[in-house]
Image (cartoon, rainbow, N blue to C red; front, side, top):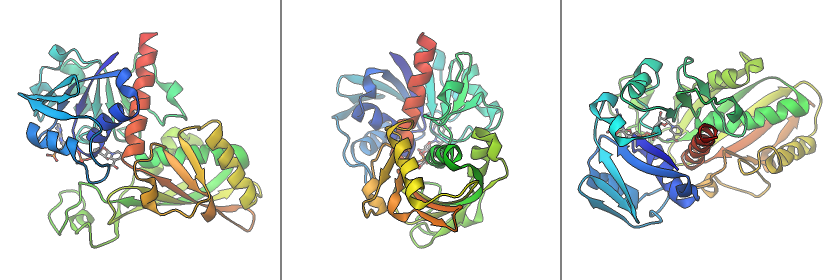
Length: 339
Ligand SMILES: NC(=O)c1ccc[n+]([C@@H]2O[C@H](COP(=O)([O-])OP(=O)(O)OC[C@H]3O[C@@H](n4cnc5c(N)ncnc54)[C@H](OP(=O)(O)O)[C@@H]3O)[C@@H](O)[C@H]2O)c1
């Protein structure tokens, strides 16, 4: 069983822990420790009650500096820097880095120096990490000698299976994406200061807010043949969870709406089974809250204009889908090491 720790117990860190108990992953992972800047009583409270995903499926208690979940005892720490904590003493096989604070290799390396053998990051990391993995697409790229791996972004996990399917079916010439993303914790409820982005000073509940996105970089890294061919924009909207990518692609050959939907439906039942969904129901975003899949294509919104311009609507639960993919990548990596 893999001994893991979670660093950063925010939306993704807590979703990872919950997914581990809800989706049968507890058989594969033992959570030894959580490091988060908050205090343990607040961590316990936010584990038990979650506005987006509901109550935690198991009893949660606090004993000293430990979170007690059923029979499991998880040590909790509050250290800002990796070397503030004696990680080696915890005998952890892998840290799931969910704080968003260590995207540069040099910063992430501090974990390895502090005694952690492997780090799985919850964000697209700098180019010099060992691998960027979209589970279902390229997990075979992980090697046993890798030490820092990124599970890419929620948007990359949503889009790559679609681009892969379209490339195989009709060829992708170029395209554009618009991500419509739920609010996140780097936005204030009412106007406030933000160090990196003026737009992120604006009240999350009152506006549709354009934000930077690294999705083009993510696509180029995973499908280098599409480098410079997909333009990406993103906006944040005042919803709690679930996002959607509006994708427009020019294919290399003529296609019909039915053919495209059929190809995507087939991918959802074969190569991307359990990771990609396809629906023709009249959905709203809230219907995909707590959906563990990376992407669900809304076939009712598919359009083909003039033979080669394909427009798709691709839903994803940016928290729950991504947390489940992190665990999939962690398990795949662990299996590789143990064989
Ligand atoms: N939310 C999503 O939909 C989503 C999806 C995919 C990937 N991601 C990525 O996952 C990362 C986390 O996102 P999130 O939405 O979970 O953010 P979040 O809710 O703000 O959680 C991050 C948590 O990490 C804590 N933290 C900050 N610095 C730390 C440190 N040095 N050591 C330990 N804990 C630290 C933060 O504490 P304080 O609040 O006290 O600073 C916060 O509780 C980001 O890189 C994000 O891009 C997010």
